[in-house]
Image (cartoon, rainbow, N blue to C red; front, top):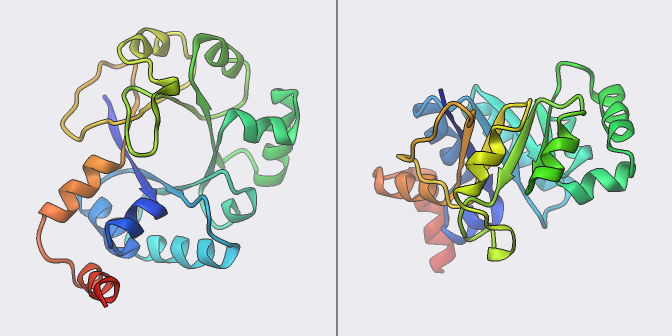
Length: 208
């Protein structure tokens, strides 16, 4: 059965004037089991504040995107292909380094985009792969959009697959997809859900 995997992209939330703690609480209300916090521009203090705010309002697993330093505050780390190469060109060695630092219970995810990357990931001690992009979105451009072909690729993975890229909340996939990673459509649902006091406060500040 495919589960929801929430993507909390800080730049997107800021642009929409959505308070991160209320987005986390919304994920809790939807019983989402796992979320990824992505912040491409913040410093470690911002990471600390945001992850703490998420943790106060969300009881599921918190994954940090890219930042090894910030991942010590969370339950897992998601890395891209280039991030892994920065640790070691030998991905098995890179994962060994990460396991030594974080332990075996820590969740490790790796982005993949094609069959070659999936087959390489099959040999690694990781917990899931991100596979995308399924379609274009505000955070995924058209360069790696593969559409329906991804669903065939997913069947080659020995790890659970999290499909990403313009995924909708009401979208259905077969059992080859363990998680559907939802960002923009989740934000739309949040904004349509009603009043959120902290978010309204953020919006008022933005309007000044």
